[in-house]
Length: 120
Image (tube, rainbow, N blue to C red; front, side, top):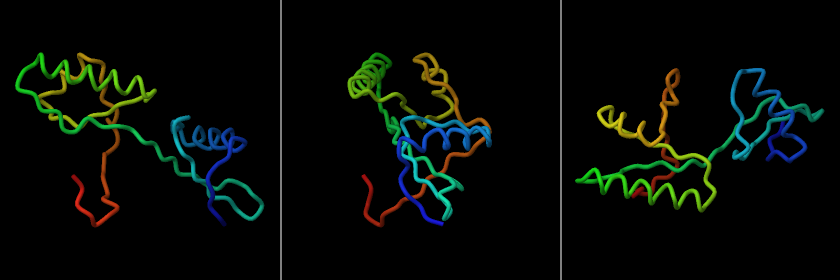
């Protein structure tokens, strides 16, 4: 068994494996494959780099909207297809108004710090 970064010709097999487990596959992902000695794909891990709004601080609703619109415009110029946010429940409706949707209804969201360096 060995692992390697997927090539373009591997993507159809990756999509079929994802469909087998009713999981979504994103074209924006970097895929690392596990394959046996006969080059059969036995698994994969998808790495997606998704920007998060965290934190967003505003003492005015107008400022909040302007900050959000500026961030969205910048991400669109960078051709970033998705943006996520960690928000308190009391702010959920505000973010729904600008198009956010709850995505992890049946899953938990977890984090692991990969370095002992202080993260700012």
